[in-house]
Length: 91
Image 1 (spheres, rainbow, N blue to C red):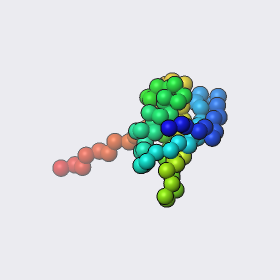
Image 2: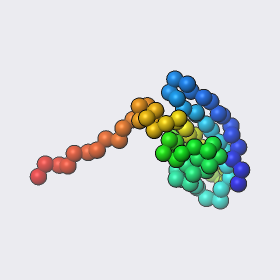
Image 3: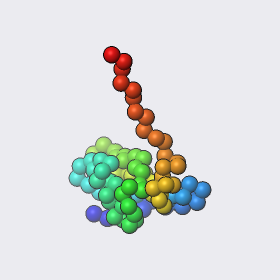
């Protein structure tokens, strides 16, 4: 199961690599399995990777993955949007 790198762009301003890879799988790998494959391929920590898309076309076993690989957790926290927590409804 080889990953084919379609795009590998270094964004110095945001301190990250923007990659697009294609790989084969029998079923939809999802974000978690794709994250592990990208981390293994680029020798990066899973905590510094943000998965943007996992795309496929009907009837094909190839998947296009868009990911951002940050240099550090601090660089990731500065750029990526924070997850908002909903307030509990007043009783």
